[in-house]
Image (cartoon, rainbow, N blue to C red):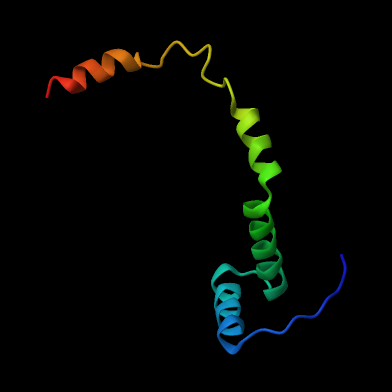
Length: 77
């Protein structure tokens, strides 16, 4: 790991301290998790990888109801 320093507002520091106490993790761990989540949300290539890995996961499932029939049944009401 690389050591770095950041400046926090009083509100940010208080929120991180609260989460640290509530979750039982150190403040550094809370900050690292927040950064990881931020990067994950912003990284579009990562989103595409997850979407592509999920493609076709229900292809050979036999226990999934027929969507067309479900729609017909729903449209009766």
